[in-house]
Image 1: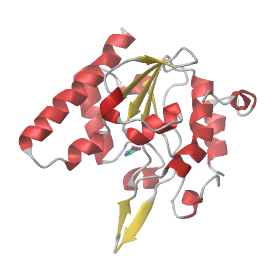
Image 2: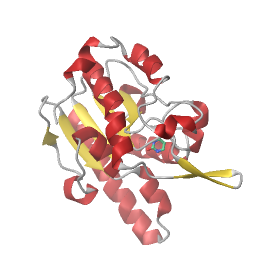
Image 3: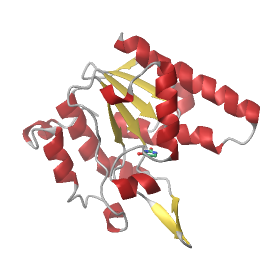
Image 4: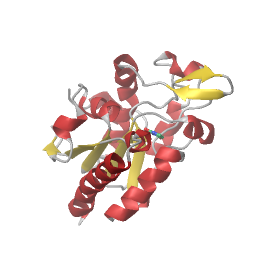
Length: 205
Ligand code: URA
């Protein structure tokens, strides 16, 4: 699906858009989350990084990728030669979806309906930012960016030109690395992730 053109006559800046997101009730996730977590980064960023949804720490901080997955992403980006500060970092879904378990809040994957409802915001962030490169971290981000589900394994590491002329690159979500137990699986996944992220560095040059 094409970008939603009506986006362009609504909020005129990313900051105004972030304020609009505060009132979002486009799906039920706002009811249990602490707050919305809008995308963050310089309005002139050429690269947009899309994650899945805020986690526990992001929900409390109101900022994307500040928890364990974010710390790993920061290390990986730095290793790959990409400064996070020059990227616009956002999520496909902007409220934390979780299941209470005692004192903890366990992350739950957003479903297709929630991802599609939240494209309203992602498309508007894209329309305002007009990034030259869109990087999807994991399957939820792929669906948010493309409007359809595709396996990470089928798309990862390859540049795809989108209808609006932007380049699209998919890779794994950093939390998939955190879940691996076996040391050699971890090393291999880390190398693969860095190889994908280095493509961002080459694109920027
Ligand atoms: N995982 C995500 O996908 N996004 C965040 O902001 C944090 C963790």
